[in-house]
Length: 506
Image 1 (cartoon, rainbow, N blue to C red):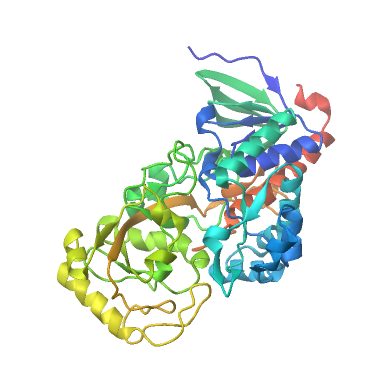
Image 2 (image 1 turned 180 degrees about the horizontal axis):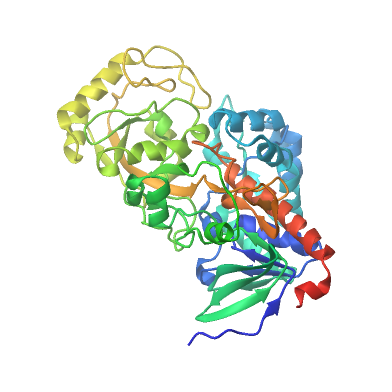
């Protein structure tokens, strides 16, 4: 039986329980609000997409001294062995604008960039621990550790550690968290939020509140919304994160007059192991199925043909769009090919038990192991080998060591594929989140079709449209969630604190 329980009252209700949601909840609480967090999943599947992240977080840090303030355990001796290029607000902003072809909303982009470092320090003050991203963003050269790509910082123990500490902090602050609780409707009166209706373990609960922060992700786990907005081929995509991101928050907001915003036809997607789970597996946390050493590969489809410039840019600036390129291929599959020269340089995910790969002593034998057009496969690699130009191979930076005379070209990191043994890693497309969302201002207000704030409605995280278009600088999503979560929490708390208390308890 479905029962309507007595109304419960909170200043602020946060819908979702990932990084953005809990940053919003903590921020609202420290600004004087009573806070309820709604997690649609059970406790063992809490944490949203953030639980699955590798933890890399992009921040405008300026220099190594700023990083040392965030990582106090970093000793002077360790720092002496590090080469860390400066990365300031203009670098972050320019990277964001470059990879989105100038389409990122300037106001949102500037807010993200300018608040990134102070938000990292705020997270540190709430007990989030950070460390240097040694494994995936650095190489040893001349006895020193050289970082690259503007992404030297990550959360300790990846997304698992981030979410563990955020939940601990929320509980320490007395924030209520309901599990198995799905928000289904926003209640309004005179164009003002007055409550939220929740399905809680078979019961309908109506919660009174004047402030709702929507931070429950995108629609990537909703097959119908994927195909309607992204295209029919997206029905075949693997969902990399939580199964619960089905667009609930977006749909609720649109029902009360919110405006769509951003690139609804675009998304963050990557090349992931062909045999990865169809949705995120909470028993195998961390981003363990990705295959992100492709800039050093030659990548072929099952017809034996190349289809992208694998070395167009550093991995951080191409990985979020190359998943779609794999999805376009016959059978939604591609093969990353490496030889013995390159295999030791590959990222750690290639060494995991979960990694699918084929190995052979000759390219002919490797082709026999794969469901590919063998003659074209061998022809493509021969043409590639003949097109490799001379130059110094420098994997930590764009080295300009390219091909000549083939299409598509490979712009950096070319080596002939000629040293046995040879390896093939099959990949398919995994979707992370859609770029389209709600129109939200830099302070977290959800805007209506006249671009006016809907009173009492706020949003953060992947629900904000207009920041990412077509592509994405690595680590920006986690930073965006934290920045706009913190902002939305403070804005919502200020809004509800200014309202007469009798409106909350009516």
